[in-house]
Image 1 (cartoon, helix red, strand yellow):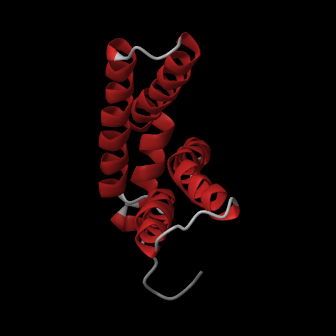
Image 2: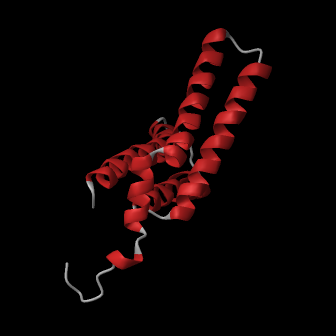
Image 3: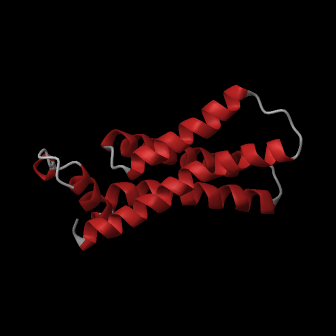
Length: 134
């Protein structure tokens, strides 16, 4: 793996944590506060997000595009919500910040040369080692 691809891997790990950590933390906080959390919430908000983050780290291109679409849609809807909301200014600021972070994550996944190098290195068929050597 080239140094550029290694840098892209670190970026992808950060973005994967950004995508998986908030829903999982919300579930853990809800469970710790004594609220009932149904198994469907654990599966949809916990296990699926962790699985998608792991697949993103493994360099799966379809997960990259799914993450880009999710971040772009979530960020755009957050900005629209800020514009249409009558919430207090601090609430708008938090929503706008979270939307901006998601939009930046989507742009980084699409435009970063290091991230592109990482995904090319992970999906390069000539790099496959079929002889069993590590």
